[in-house]
Image 1 (tube, one colour):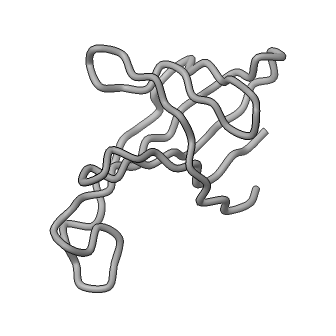
Image 2 (tube, rainbow, N blue to C red; image 1 turned 180 degrees about the vertical axis):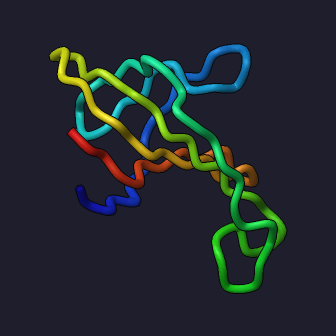
Length: 89
């Protein structure tokens, strides 16, 4: 497991939860949401500095080749940018 912090393209469902994401040329399908956490809250010098929140979503995902994995992806609520944080599997 490594910490990546790389931008990803996320396609969300109508409920706001990710359904698919693309990372490093591969498409992943979200099989289920394991958990969500909000961090930041504008803490000076921390994630979400400047009054934004960072939403961390842990998902069970499957690559386009059928390989299962667990991923931590984050959403910066101010920019709507998603980031791959960690990937296991």
